[in-house]
Length: 370
Image (cartoon, rainbow, N blue to C red; front, side, top):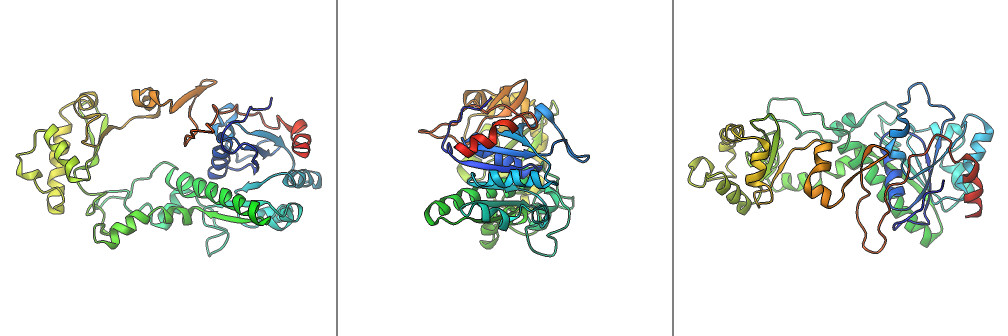
């Protein structure tokens, strides 16, 4: 079955060499927005593979071919597909694609307009280029993890979003689209080296600006976004959590008014870091007196900059999220809808998750005649 494509990237052809994490997510993002993405998978899952089967959401909307890249026939199959595509995505360690005979030189020889996207943690060069690693390691080295913790405590390990998705997938997507735009003008393709250490370091730009202006100190718990009582999360009476982020004075005044703290001298100087530790304790004690839902009734929708901390199922059921149809279920699997949104070329609902090798018989002829 061929997915009916819709969105701003209809007509774009992307070849993905199956991997894990940020590469597949980037390819999914492009497929969500209408690109024809063909993922090249192993004939059988490898011994170290995390095979999620029908729950492999990152493969939604793609077409799957299964080939043996260790054979000349398999390599030639991929090179034939390369001839027809705008971009290629691979997430192997540096040198692996070259050893397979599918490196940039071989692929660009078959398609000079190809944009060859390389997704790694450490990058294609540098002392760590060939070392193993994961999201946490990359954002630790880049500086992006530093402020994720309180004074005297180890940084909190975040989900694989800051590095893999934020610093990896999104930067690769931007790089590929920029390269494709350039290729359509110049006629020449190129290699995009998307490294998570590069992207996650680039994402710290706002923090670096605060640091340069003296508003973000190196010590954790002493800066605007990691120390104040008005920018934190708190436990409620039902052991659920809420967040407040009342950064600007007018929003802080609104929060204090809602909490009936306007006359309390402890909270009269929100930017005085000397008061933050005691103010955090007072806030923690205050928020622990009511349930999360009770705090939602008082604060949600106001300018106090408030939100409950929800798990994915709760988020999917929230009225705001439902109104925007941000989550959906396909075949019983909770998924996030395509983003961002386009007025003239809206994306379709996510396409189905293909079976391994489901499209072997049609992709080559389809792309050859497309």
